[in-house]
Image (cartoon, rainbow over all chains, first blue to last red):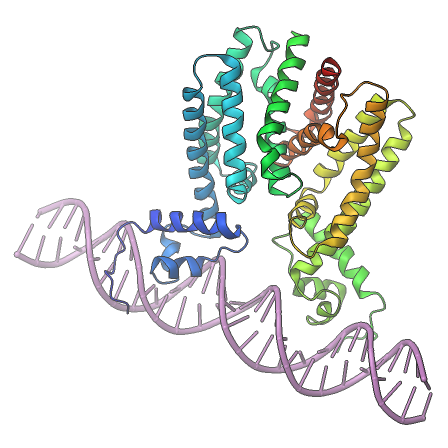
Length: 197
Length: 197
DNA sequence: CAACAATGTAGACATCAGCAACAATGATGT
DNA sequence: ACATCATTGTTGCTGATGTCTACATTGTTG
């Protein structure tokens, strides 16, 4: 039909890329497999070879999202130097930045997590969060954070970041307040933990 | 066709009720207007008289959600007695309970907020959050919380609650940890604020 | 009781996800 | 080299959906 090779070459990657853009710009609801195929220049049945159904595409999107999140977190921590609190602030800021830049993707990432056959997704998530866990561990080692299961220690802080991001994407807080809010939250957190240590 | 009166009597309410159930049990994605009409026993075009499109139904759901949330918050605060901290803990617990019981509805509530013509929705939201604001004001009056714009003072705490709820619905935290997590967060919050006052 | 507004019905259309039969291409083994 | 097979795309079909329009029924009001 169209003047293009029968085989696309790397359809899967192209679909993921275009899907990611659409999800970011219009939300996951408004993503159509057929429209996606059109945009990439391929017939409506072609995506099925790579993603058996809509959900499979979302899962793949979520997985690559975790990969990217992990990268950004790692970069932020590395750029923050050696100290615990700078690293904590940097990673928190990076997380919230990611979450607000791509809210729909974040939603996919978490929506997929409590599904069944999501082992690859879980692994990707774990890799991403390992960065944060390391920071918490450092805080505990330096005696700035209370002892105990580091995952649990970090949970409240993580929840707060997630919530701040939600408020921004929900329009209850405008983006200008973002950094200040994150700073406040971390200050509260560190102060609360230090007193309890 | 079917053996029922031509006019339903209160279709709008029936639709909202059934829609709310479906959204709670299956998520907003899987709500179909036609299926809804079928369940209520009416032709597929009938809902259109009350909700011009899908989004209008969601907006109405969100609005009634805020009403219910406000009620639950008020009841929780009233039942908690007169003291600030009991009220704070009660309202926070009530919020998180609401959010985890009906995650899809909560999503609708916040997704609709940053839309345009949502004045009724905004008003409903404001009514609901007024309860929380009162509690913050009390805390400030008693000198337990730092001074300043009460909305901003409560924001970090509110974000934390929102985030905790998100972690639970996302399956990253199981429901048994919920109350403990909320307690922790409030303790952190109060301790952090007191030190800053 | 006769218009009129409100509410519900029926059918049409475009789109979608999922499926299956078929076609073109690429890879493998001999 | 070349026949065979797996991979990857294409086309057409089915059932369902949201939205739209023309029409039917009922309730209301002057």
